[in-house]
Length: 186
Image (cartoon, rainbow, N blue to C red):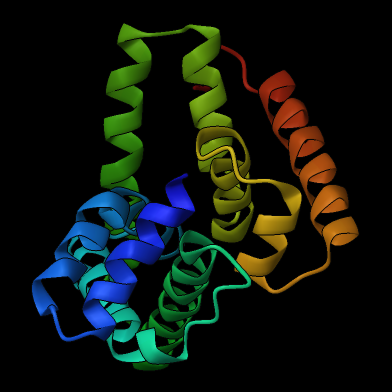
């Protein structure tokens, strides 16, 4: 049913109704932003990159094959665009004089929150913060967005068994991190 709705709007766009694409943007903007933010870890860059994702999707809509879901196709564009942006930033060496200062600010914010919350949920969030961006994205796609391992494989360009193994290892890593984190360390 959801796919039919997407195909309806895609059809309208392909027939020349430029405004119909806004319905797809509205429907998927939160998840596209989430994917991009999980990779880039920077709000402003994530917003700009998410906009770029939708421009790429619009421009490439004629090449969209309906054998996969639109969301899977779009999430793949989001992931690849975010990775490209991350590589571009790495090449530019991030024009920050002191990256560790930014990390200290983030750590201080986390410490302030830790004083308020020492719950299992907070420890889980802290453990998620220790994951690599792609690991965090995989967990988010699987648990928060309820994508299947097949869909995650298509988004990230890997086989289903590789996705299953990676999810298993990521869950184990989260568990190990949570065991190590004591309430006074979160």
